[in-house]
Image (cartoon, rainbow, N blue to C red; front, side):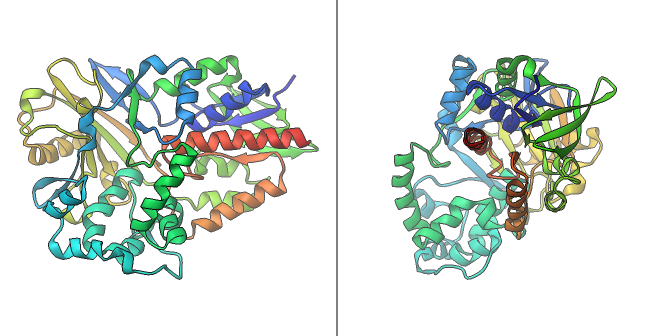
Length: 457
């Protein structure tokens, strides 16, 4: 008997949809082109160092995490970030400046001039926009250029590896957009929004606890795959999705042979560039929309150093670099400060990101050049001494989907395809948010939609 629901793509989105459906008694089959599950969420241990190929942590913004982690038996493996993780730094004029955590710290901070601070304090006196805005336009209008340059620009690089001049504030940062749309301003919206989140049992990203697992974020997709058992087919590349009567037919390749299966419903949980050719014949408008989504290249460089080589305290999450500083890295996470056992005793692990929309060409540099580039940047910024004890480079030629201006047209095309082809669902990080918590939440919503549709049919 074939599956009721076929899911293509075994990243965190596809795995979570499959898990929620299987737990509800639905027959599922998950097809994954790669040799292993997890997508970008993978971890490995090398010479005593823990290397994260993708996300280094997640924010506990939704109670779904508690539910999911307990259900797959990972509660005892979860680790929360140290108190020092609250400290985050921005590089400016050759120094690392802490992001202020209180109003008094903001007033005392040397990260912005007094003119820039006064411009931020005038935020409540600016009205709503009358057009779609980029993140940069929105921030400039509400809090000024200096705050854009030395807070939002590096923040966008850290999250999206993106360009705030191109990202749509409405779709890339919907909560920020909603503060103005619903409440008329950021300060007033933050106060009122906090009350609403408490009612929904959700945490703001600024207040949510940061967590990972003893052996890294890759533990979650691995545990989900174990729970799903033989309903996960790795090394199985989907080729095409077509409608055959009341069902969908999925052509695929496995063990060097082409075959096909039928399912009542199909969930596309692959990146947009992989989903587009799958639905090219079934839903050509949706395929063209998916092809429009930009993914910049990012290289992740993990370096290990003796603690004695570090010239300043690693007393925080890490640091981000504004574009105006004209450095060759986007930022660095101080892994060993965040979580235990990220490096051998007496050593530290540092994870640095290169490329993105800012400098895509740097992400494509040869491995040895990337290691030397990052080591040189960190030697200057962190006053490191000597050569790294360990180095590892992970490359993502198409890393993170960019929710750019006009993104609403892309989402509308996907909505139309789902209406026109009942039983087809798109669930990936190009829809609903790129964070791990966003993906899990979207997966739960997709599973619930499928269960409702199934009950009506």
